[in-house]
Image (cartoon, rainbow over all chains, first blue to last red; front, side):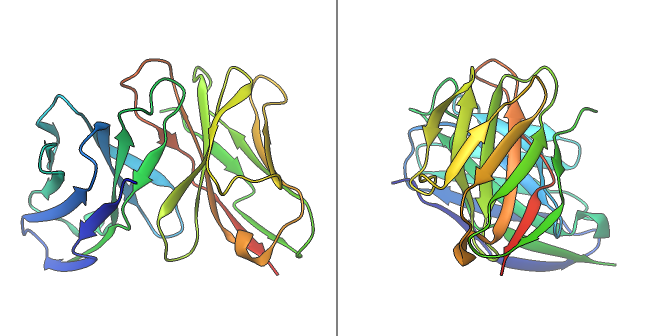
Length: 116
Length: 114
């Protein structure tokens, strides 16, 4: 059974700092990995999607990497801002979850606080 | 940018009552999903729906749950007889066709069963 773990559970940094959030998964037979942002009481906003054949994806100040063989992904946030404060979730889609089946397995998230 | 919309944002119901959670997926999307998040826990998959039928469901999605796409725009989740442990945030998601498209989630409905 796929298990997704995110470390640390919470992180507090001063504004302007670069930071890395970690995600690990136990079954490397994944289709893709997706990073989400969740604001308190809100839905999930997709940040980056990395296909299993890719090593990284970038969007603005965000860079996500994927090392499928070791079961790890990182989300790098450059020059953090107070508006980046949120919970960041990692989710994997298993390789046998094809077509209409899009069963994501989520980690518990990292709660990020960026202090002004 | 098109969004997945969910109503209501918060629903309070008594144990044993039926509830219907409503979702309007993005208009050209073909695949629809429900996930839930119990407070303080991980987001969990409930069910996927395509071509007017369930394509996969989790062990959570028992006979008390059902989904329906009654018309061309709405996608509903019904819980027949709610239990205290059904209290959670329920998220609807959709995606267009193609293997590589990401899921787009709504803002969720917070269900509180008293």
